[in-house]
Amino acid sequence: MARPARVTLVEVGPRDGLQNEAVPVSLDIKLALVERLAAAGLPVVEAGSFVSPRRVPQMAGSAELYRRLTRRPGTAYPALVPNLQGLAAALDAGVTEAALFVSASEGFSQRNIACSIADSLARIAPVASEVIAQGVRLRGYVSCVLGCPYDGAVAPEAVADISARLLDLGCDEISLGDTIGIGTADAVRALLDVVAARIPAERIAMHFHDTYGQGVANVLVSLEAGIATFDCSVAGLGGCPFAVGATGNVATEDVLYLLNGLGIETGIDLRSVAETGAWISAQLGRDSASRAGRALLA
Ligand code: HMG
Ligand code: MG
Image (tube, rainbow, N blue to C red; front, side, top):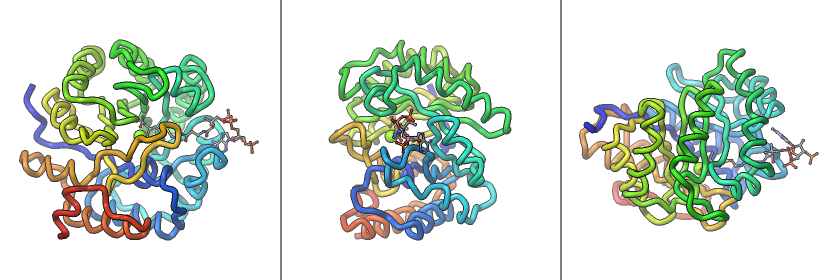
């Protein structure tokens, strides 16, 4: 399949990244991060989550963040919501795009959200209905699509089934998460062969973590399967609190460097993203995990 001429990058660093950073990050820094990323041209910046503050302390200030956020026209700022309680808080804080999450593996579902896959689908169904009733755009995440830290291999058919259920619930887009960053190129191809046979490629986003350094290769393989939306995290921030050892998402700078080299349009300024990556990494007291970001600023 031909590569897309234009790609949408969904910046998840302020949520997926910061949720797993050990150093506490102040609200002012989080706000500056979100606003700098939007100013760099990222069309979608996932800015926080409305989950249990006991389970994910780093996201505790999300309501305040959304209240104080200066929004750029044309930029979307979705938030992760796990249940009706989270949705109510998100709507109250002015969130206008929501993301729900389920796992393709039972082991991760239990560790992440303390229930089975079937129960999680039952739990999010009323959330999805409410989101749609409010006219809010809805994204669905599927975790562990290329393997689970607890259960091992995950069948592409299981990912396709659960993705189809999320579409039935009203999700506009399904983000397929390699939560532990274990996938390699052929596994991505095999997954997309099965999933894209049931779900239009334009409604699939790929969400790679870069634990084994395969993120950029996996993005390329996905582009060749016609995928045009990718999640990524500035400076490769983060990991997952419920998948020990997993590193952050593939770095936004690294994906942009690939896309620029392929002549694929994004509307994003790589240098601004790299500067923001260096800045947030300094706030966290470490180097950026983005190779392209470090090289550009060297
Ligand atoms: P629960 O059913 O209430 O059970 O929540 P619980 O025992 O886990 O939690 C109970 C406590 O959480 C209670 O408070 C609730 O009020 C509170 P307590 O009485 O103990 O003080 N609570 C909430 N507080 C604020 N907002 C809420 C909320 N809901 C319950 N919305 C639930 C189950 C799943 C909601 C909870 O366990 C939770 O929030 N867990 C955190 C899950 C999470 O954020 N995981 C990381 C994000 S997923 C991810 O990163 C993967 C992704 O990036 C894709 C990929 O890479 O694969 C998306
Ligand atoms: Mg993730």
